[in-house]
Length: 68
Image (cartoon, rainbow, N blue to C red; front, side, top):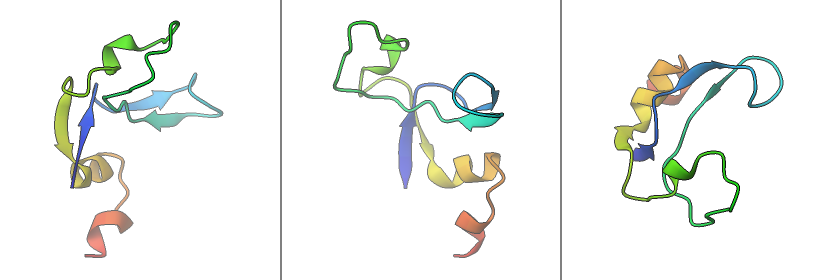
Protein backbone atom coordinates (compact mmCIF):
# COMPACT_ATOMS: atom_id res chain seq x y z
CA UNK A 1 0.00 0.00 0.00
CA UNK A 2 1.26 3.49 -0.81
CA UNK A 3 0.70 7.03 0.43
CA UNK A 4 1.57 10.39 -1.13
CA UNK A 5 3.88 12.52 0.99
CA UNK A 6 4.67 16.21 0.76
CA UNK A 7 8.04 15.86 2.48
CA UNK A 8 10.29 13.39 4.25
CA UNK A 9 9.44 12.30 7.77
CA UNK A 10 10.28 14.78 10.48
CA UNK A 11 11.42 12.62 13.42
CA UNK A 12 11.97 15.36 15.98
CA UNK A 13 9.08 17.84 15.99
CA UNK A 14 8.47 19.76 19.21
CA UNK A 15 5.80 22.10 17.81
CA UNK A 16 3.23 19.63 16.44
CA UNK A 17 1.91 18.37 19.77
CA UNK A 18 3.15 17.44 23.22
CA UNK A 19 6.63 16.01 23.57
CA UNK A 20 8.93 14.99 20.74
CA UNK A 21 7.12 13.25 17.91
CA UNK A 22 7.47 12.14 14.32
CA UNK A 23 5.45 14.05 11.74
CA UNK A 24 4.26 12.46 8.50
CA UNK A 25 3.60 15.27 6.00
CA UNK A 26 0.85 13.94 3.73
CA UNK A 27 0.08 15.46 0.34
CA UNK A 28 -3.36 16.50 -0.91
CA UNK A 29 -6.01 18.59 0.85
CA UNK A 30 -9.38 19.73 -0.53
CA UNK A 31 -10.00 22.45 2.08
CA UNK A 32 -7.65 25.22 0.90
CA UNK A 33 -8.03 27.15 4.16
CA UNK A 34 -7.15 30.84 3.64
CA UNK A 35 -4.43 30.93 6.30
CA UNK A 36 -3.05 27.42 5.81
CA UNK A 37 0.51 27.00 7.08
CA UNK A 38 1.30 24.45 4.36
CA UNK A 39 -0.45 25.47 1.12
CA UNK A 40 2.12 23.53 -0.92
CA UNK A 41 0.42 20.34 0.33
CA UNK A 42 -2.96 21.11 -1.33
CA UNK A 43 -2.19 19.58 -4.74
CA UNK A 44 -3.22 15.90 -4.78
CA UNK A 45 -0.68 15.28 -7.56
CA UNK A 46 2.22 16.95 -5.76
CA UNK A 47 4.78 15.39 -3.49
CA UNK A 48 5.86 11.80 -4.03
CA UNK A 49 4.50 8.30 -3.48
CA UNK A 50 6.07 5.99 -0.90
CA UNK A 51 5.29 2.51 0.41
CA UNK A 52 3.69 2.50 3.86
CA UNK A 53 6.04 -0.28 4.91
CA UNK A 54 8.98 2.05 4.25
CA UNK A 55 7.45 4.66 6.53
CA UNK A 56 6.86 2.10 9.27
CA UNK A 57 10.45 0.89 9.00
CA UNK A 58 11.80 4.45 9.14
CA UNK A 59 9.68 5.09 12.23
CA UNK A 60 10.98 1.81 13.70
CA UNK A 61 7.53 0.26 14.13
CA UNK A 62 8.34 -3.41 13.49
CA UNK A 63 4.99 -4.84 14.57
CA UNK A 64 3.30 -3.31 11.54
CA UNK A 65 5.42 -5.10 8.95
CA UNK A 66 6.99 -8.10 10.72
CA UNK A 67 3.66 -9.69 11.63
CA UNK A 68 3.03 -10.53 7.96
